[in-house]
Image 1 (cartoon, rainbow, N blue to C red):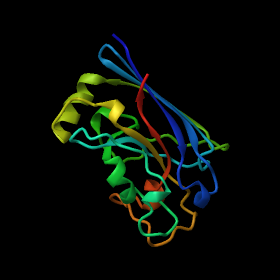
Image 2 (cartoon, rainbow, N blue to C red):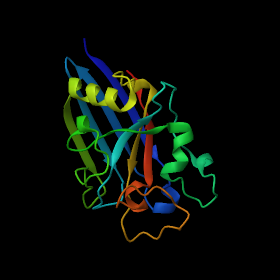
Image 3 (cartoon, helix red, strand yellow):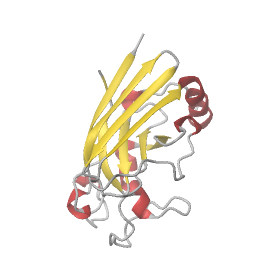
Length: 185
């Protein structure tokens, strides 16, 4: 039996980054494969874009962040400010989602027009095993998750108040630019 999910991805921080990133994500579970397709438009061009689903390990329903999450009033919603409503970063949409190795350089890079497509067939058994190892359950509960797309050019001036560095990756890499609620179709 095939299970289908999708998310309309809407801009976040668009008034500060100069572009309104948007798109659509679809997730289809077919047998033992999770098929992921993400189509993004108007992202910062020629930039690597980290993308993940976020959520709460306890199964609480995640919601998308809005400007209301800008608790420090700097005009940006940074990664830590999304956590109270969206939970933690869970599964990356990179070269190997089933490895759940978030900080790496295998995410999509947008073209000269700010567009990119991401397609990946993920072995569900490997993803569920790693998910259980990290979060204590093998139930991905996609309809309780949100998708985030991150990343702005290194030369974009960001205030010192933006948090979210991960390892040697700074806030330019982790700043959310778009978000969508995953729903069961």
